[in-house]
Image 1 (cartoon, helix red, strand yellow):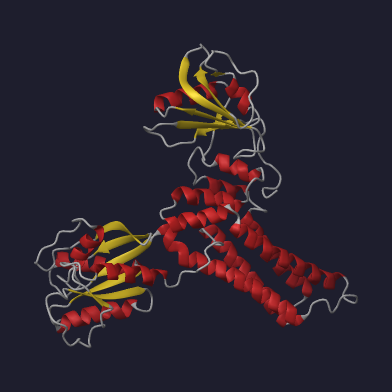
Image 2 (tube, rainbow, N blue to C red):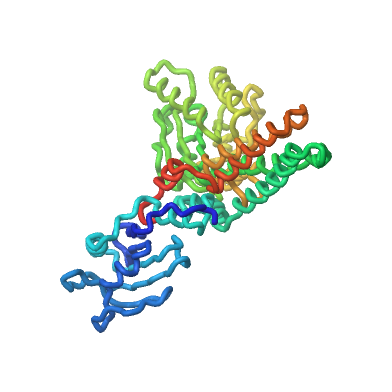
Length: 467
């Protein structure tokens, strides 16, 4: 049982709306707890107007919900799922009614008047975890599924629901526990098992564990963009086509475009998808030397936005020769970014001139495009996706999806380093055993095998009510 000892008050039966509020075909009210059937069955009547004496588990019944005065609130489908074959591993009843907020509020109010308590955010999933049906990685994956913004982020969350991260962590944990047993045997019986710890085997084992944990850590870092999106900034000199590119990528007129340099003076942001990658794209004020105070403020905002970007598209105007100050500005931005973020140098307006000698003071373009004629726009999108996906892991099954788990994996990696270093330097086996226990404890916290109520409250408070 992953959740360990059940911490739920067995007398508390909870209910909540399990579907979004608003107009729609169906609304579902979920009830969970030992009295779920008792507290709902008495208000359910079949088409003949009779209460059901027996309700079979996992069977759908059609009928009506009536209040204490016998007034019909709605026609519904009534489903009972007997423990432990339910989402929470408790007795669960789901009432499927029409989704009118008035109807749903009336049914919920009826249940609450008769002793059912309103569920807290995430309480159904929390009960599934505490009752041992899922571990904490699977519980946390539920919110990732709800919040998934791309097919890839959904695939990652579904792999956690299926237990891929749990399986990887459990395998590492078992090898550590076996190693811990050998270390503690040397502590307890030094004369009998002195040679049980082969230095070469120990080093290989610890290196293997460290490598696997490092892969989990790097997968989290690399796949962050599929969960949170990527920040892409279009920057460059005035009138190079930055706003036109934004509009072309969005396929609509988001930014004002004129032949007058400096039209864009503030940040213009929107969201696009390229190959399933959510990208927050920002058009910025043209970078140049100016005495205009408003333009100076816009340029400062541009530089700040570039600092926080994951990907910079540095736009050049391929139809004219840049001046000295423009070359200096372009070169400064490029040099400040190329070591810390992904950069694509894009030369626009290639349709206006023949290929000319490149000015060596500015970076060589990665691609030449024409936003006006849409020449090479698809190729640019392909380059953007390729640059983003270049460092993506091929195996995305076991991924550390959130910051809490990421911090614990980092802690486990540090513990493995201390174990290895302790063995190399001849540190006492009792101290090495302590580091092993620290590592196992960090992995246990990832899975929720050990937990604190404050951690659980913080995790499940991010869920919606009804899940």
